[in-house]
Image 1 (cartoon, one colour):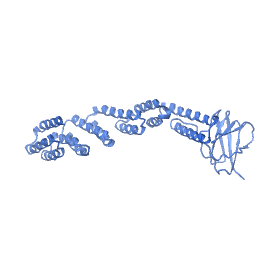
Image 2 (tube, helix red, strand yellow):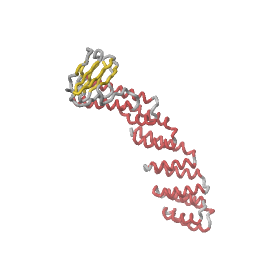
Image 3 (cartoon, helix red, strand yellow):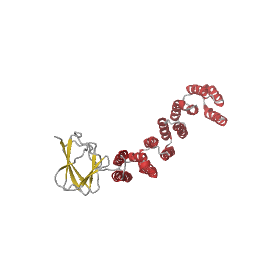
Image 4 (tube, rainbow, N blue to C red):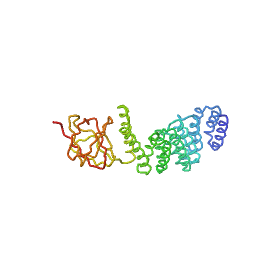
Length: 344
């Protein structure tokens, strides 16, 4: 700190060498205050000097520096002084460095909006600082992704994109790379952040297919493994969640969840399962009839039971309460007609 005080005093002495006689005494008082770290008093004397010598760019600049050193609560005054110094012809690269310094302090104190404003101001005075600022943001994004903090990473991503919108593909690939480190289960929030940066990029399909594969494996487990009712319920919830996530990356066959007309047709390939649980109107006071060429399909219930339909060409009542919802699975490629009637 003593070294800083000595340097600051020397700088002020040099800068103010051409200051008018009217401002000289106030400058000397400011120098004295700086040496004993009375920055607020120094600011008062500097403001007096500015009023007495309004066209001295160095006076405005040094007032801005002192305000900056007084802390972030004084940055608004520093901003005013630095802008005036720039208009009066002070070295803009030097002013840009001060803005970047202040922005870094704001960033460390989580004042992200103000930091972004100051970074932009620094770039406007010295465009060569842009790469340094971008690298700083990218470093913060990487730290957030390593910590699996996708929300924090998104904050930095959005602010960086406001500085340079052309970085979206570069950031997309960075984010997706980190998502792949953790896989589609642990890294799903990171993948969703990546997808928001580029909805049509090729890597999205890989993630979507992996999520669908996970959903299919869990769904087969439900109908093939001995499980308790509670275990089945929990696994069904997992399946729905994975498929819903997969839809954000790829287009999956989509069936209406609630049927509101009397007749519906489902064309199913071998082992293909309708994408969502089918629920029906009217509740349990309905009869459900299925028809197809030869009933080559199965009805999957949420409790894990499978109702098999193998042969016959006429419509056939299910004989089960399907009000809780069900899915259809093709035994071989077939077209299934579902007819809903209010029970008499």
